[in-house]
Length: 575
Image 1: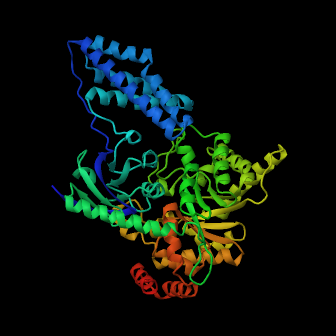
Image 2 (image 1 turned 90 degrees about the vertical axis):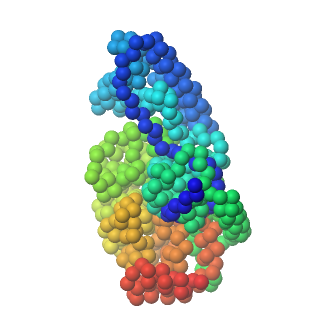
Image 3 (image 1 turned 30 degrees about the horizontal axis):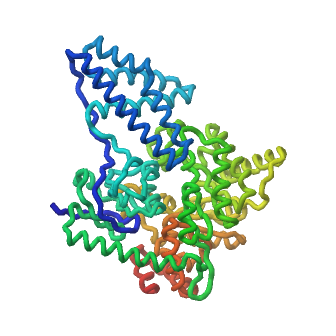
């Protein structure tokens, strides 16, 4: 039966394909007494064999798409599967207690997990607990005859359906086969939405009920431009969606003609259009979309894609690849921003009531726990600095004291490298991400000490409005054009310019087609966005006159009381 759902349009594009449910299956079971213990051992052997074959396939795919180093995490899983002691104990449990294989598996693996987790002074052993938990889950799924979803193994055209997608889930999506994704929760600024735009995968988030409505294999029509999903569309509806996709492709082809054009307004003023990236592989998208710089390199993906803390050399190679790949164009590297909704299995962080307001980003880097990690990152960046135009940005800075402490560590590690005879660039700019209202308010003080500002609007908006950007109940308060937000941004831009510094923006607002005219009018110097938004924004900027946009911004700041009034005013100026 045809059913229509509405969600938040998170990434442009249109797709029609079968649903692939990325939903965890029910792995519950009952402990039962069995008479034929040999049959249970045979069931266990079959589940072990299937798990081994599956993991070998996953490992091979991971090595191809992510590299050999990242694929090695699955070697540990395969070792668990072939551990004769653990497997022997499971079989012995089946024999001695005449229980089903599921029960014996859980009892033995729980014992191992508890034993390794108790070794809180040994990070390596604690990681083994996570390996055993993952492997036990896979064996149990095969014993119960259910499939564990694995996005990296998708080999046909599908629309991924999930409650939510983690950054690591999204990173595994193969654009060849994943034509779109749709989720129950999330917003335009959720990490899955941001990554979807980077990967150029159409996406709709915040439908609230897609996982409850859709069955595996059902046909879906997805319009990521409008936020529409149709379950089991008619042939006529499919044709409409396909036509919309063709129209969007034609519009993209027009934008692509601007790939090598300068970003100039109608009256000839140049602005810098940069791209946000997560890995060196994303540079393909930057070049394909005519990016003039990298305005945000999210280095936390180096940590999230690694089974342990990435080494100095691993990081150096990644930074060097990006700097060389940009061929002298600016590259703004944000230091590690772990915490909030981004966790590392090998970094033990405290459980917090509100992690977005807690121990995260620079707060970890400046702590005793994060000191080695931060210094390692600084050394890797400093070593890589000779390969391009490096700019370093500290995230989640609230006070001048924090910036000075971070800058002090930067200077300290720089001097150590020089003393060791390592060549380091003398032209590295060091700035901060403005995402905490406290920093925006005293931007004039910061501007005397930093080399640049980059406004992180995703967090700045949620902190200013006291509204969680992932919470649908208060999503109406996520207002990028609210006069309070615009005034904070204008204050930051003016403070930078008063000290001869530049001000950029790396939040999603930088590529927002309603916000761009306002930001041009306020004098923002650099706009950094998902690479796929660059050409569309360049096309818009060619139609804007900076004098008129300055008048627009001035009126929005002085005369408008609400976000709706601001939007109405922008529409009046930009037709």
